[in-house]
Image 1 (cartoon, rainbow, N blue to C red):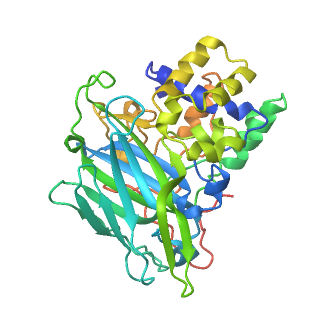
Image 2: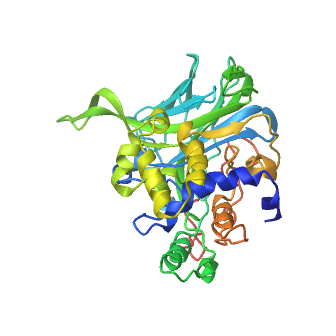
Length: 407
């Protein structure tokens, strides 16, 4: 963890201290990824965001990779049944380019009805300046080997798109972390509880989609909030229309305006910071609500209960509230390395890559910049080195073969 001694991590410390200090509140539900962050999202798995990622393509830094995962914990044996996108969900990516809390561009992703278990769904992607890309999803299979990822590239814009089932790229020992936090809450911190080293997400798949977009496509311009014209913010909202009718023939009709079920930019904001009673409200809010202080009292109250002084409350609130919950990527910082990138200076919170060890970063600062790890330090299977960079989905195993799960 010597890379954490770089001065750049002062900024990480500020961000993570704010986002994760409520882990030590006895009333918080303890998690550290967005898999199941609120009651409504918990009950609507196709809308439940797992993670959001934004990083430069390590093979070509002129392209931004934006990725999202939803509908977590799909077991390989149910790939054909669960390996699909809900056609009544709108996946809306918000792009912020001026350094404030307002979404400047959107990418609207929707999927067609599933017609069979052996045919792809068709994704319709409406890009920020009106171009429409249609692309087939990758068809799931119960065969020993997964189908190759299907990637579609639009010749006009240079945008590439993937959607389908993939291995869940997140890695984290949920029980070990929770037991450690419980020991902190009891007044007897016990780092040994982190030694399980078992990745709770190993062996499971997730629904994923990804876009590769030329940086030039966003038409970044110098503004007061983005003077270098080199930072973009990214978040994801999953939305449903307000009225649903199940017809006598079993078909489903929807109408009305869209309501957000789940939203996410940075990891851990809603999961660890917002009180349980306000999680649905937070998800139905906006980044502009964040900046207007709609949730500020809850945030400040939590920090005050933890003894955070007013100076640091001001610093931390400015980072997390003033500009809204966006994952922000500086496209001027080069990204390189396998599996989507691995060089230290380009990692979270400068965007987020598939391999960034968010949990160890958190624990490093929770332990007052002493090295502390949940010992689940990498994905259980290798990621790919080209777009979309996800690892291929876990497949059913032969008798007597390890299934990779580490519960």
